[in-house]
Image (cartoon, rainbow, N blue to C red; front, side, top):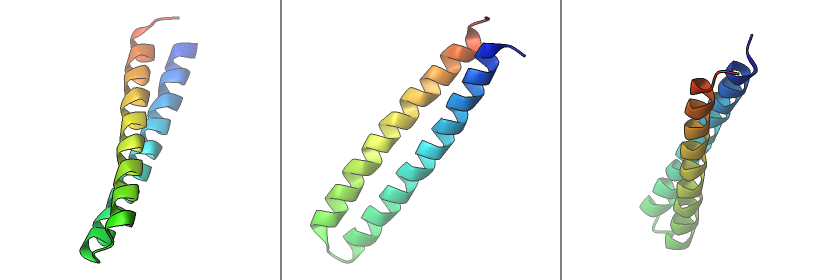
Length: 70
């Protein structure tokens, strides 16, 4: 089994986990928005966007490592 295959799979699993964390933070922000708690909504949404950015970077790295053959 190639090293790049293993690295790509690990990065993809990390992408899925970080995407799940982003979805959870967006859900917390949505619940706070419904309860008119603006401060908690902004904090949760900013954390959600940060984790969404992490997920995008991890997906990009996973794709790059899947294309490299070593």
